[in-house]
Length: 287
Image (cartoon, rainbow, N blue to C red):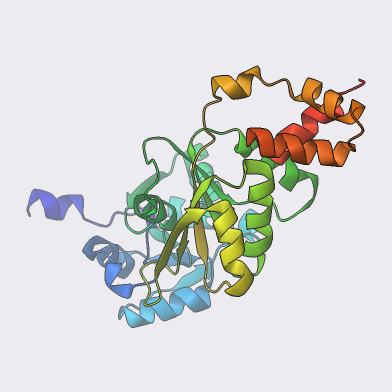
């Protein structure tokens, strides 16, 4: 037996994290096919979707579901089967399991229980979009899906607006317009964005523009498909921005008869700073 064959041997009592295609079935790897064919069972986010995938690959395996709603009970069950000598392949609906995925808890559970976990690398929508974005790939932050609404969403947007790393965010088509509008408000309309849609599929599309242009574009174009949004990190503060005392400028404008709302708009236009930053500084007046 060669070294390569020995390294690729499917072992007992081991959890395999198996990347699956994010769109194009031809992206499945030879090693992924081997592991999926030889493990004792497959744990999948959605057994219907994954069952169809395995069928197309010509693979028949016992399957169990493992997802957000049953992970508390199903995780220990999988662990007990692994302790009993079985091998398991964990897969998500598409891409790399455990990345913005409940599989992360199963990996942590296995680590606590001393169960070995191995990786079968492959497609990942976040990294694929970053590579295609045309933005800096040297330092980046993956945010997955943002909180849907409320204080948690506002806090997250406020926090990441200051991040100088390239941001990677997943978004559904029905929320895209609202999210882009919020990005303009929190990040500033001139920030660059790459909207990566339907990656590796027939209708793959990469749109590179500013946030303002993206908002305008989707006024007449209906979003379709799943999106990965890649956004330029926050620029380092320039000397001009650092020298501007927002509160003093706002106080002067208001003293001259301008409303607080119009003062904020004026300062945003003058400085190019995000509206939420200006608003927060103006609120400090009189404190």
